[in-house]
View 1 (cartoon, rainbow, N blue to C red):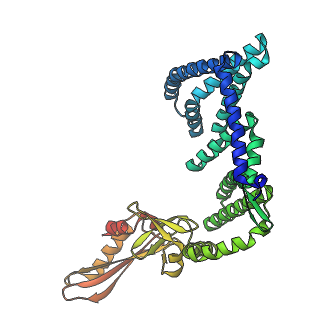
View 2 (view 1 turned 135 degrees about the vertical axis):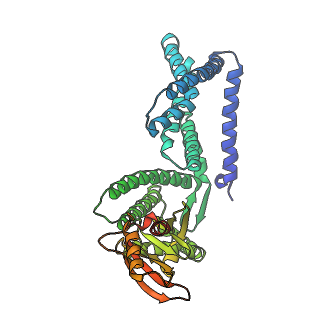
View 3 (view 1 turned 45 degrees about the horizontal axis):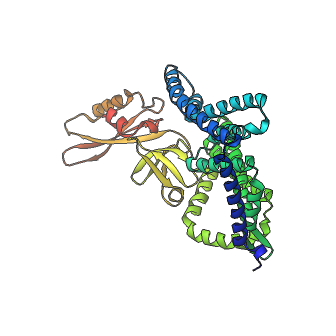
Length: 409
């Protein structure tokens, strides 16, 4: 391979250039002059900013504690300001000294101070802007990536670094993917994904406030909007950086086959979830029984349904089990639920009086429906008792079944 096209040789040349620039800067720092004076001033300003951060941070914390009724976003903003308070003070002090030196001496004698002030201000802005990313690991990656890019850009070495990253590439036929293209694609896709998340959240909030849409269709509409927006953001990000999608067709096809076998259950649950939402057999708020699990549907996700029981436990049931298994939906077409209580009395008791007392006992409970009156019938004659069944209706199965039976008893 020719040396001019060898990535390792290019790396050595670029590294040598950076090393020479670093040695030149360090020689200027250790040599008495205005560059050394600016470095000493920056060190002094950093110490002052650190001291101010400690004192003003405590004052800010006490002031926030004296306030009540603040919104969550206001508290998060104050917490972020407190975290970046030292850097904020450093930027303010640097800009103040830079402005004074610009008016009393040559501009070149305050260049480093102005550069440090700009870097500090940009870092603070990035720290606040990346709070839009909720995922903490992703937020850290985005923050560091933006900090590195801003630093390289302000130091006027971003073009050299970009050229070096572009030389490191993977070429397969006409398809070429460089490290620079990959990094650019990740950044663009990340930004578009964040915008898609914000738009999907606003759209989902609007859909959920619409009472004319059923709960199951609300979930389906929200999932459809999210899938469309995220897919659009991904493909737009890939096209924006100039990646030819046709070159990835064979590779993506092979990967798709592998993922199809590996994620068979995941895909099955996803398809089952879509079927459940479309046929409306189960929807959020329904009371269901599946095996030994009895509770109401809290949420319907892409992979599972969240079922909350009366004792506060939350079961995550795969969507496939809801399709293939036998599910009792107590509130599928309506909320009316009939409950049966079996009991027995002695042969000496008047059966007419027993039935009357049983009906009166059920009618005296608030949750028992009056327009569907309770009934009591004899169902058998045991060895030592007459067997009865008491039937009554309720309309709120989410309130529990065992407790209402106990109240009737």
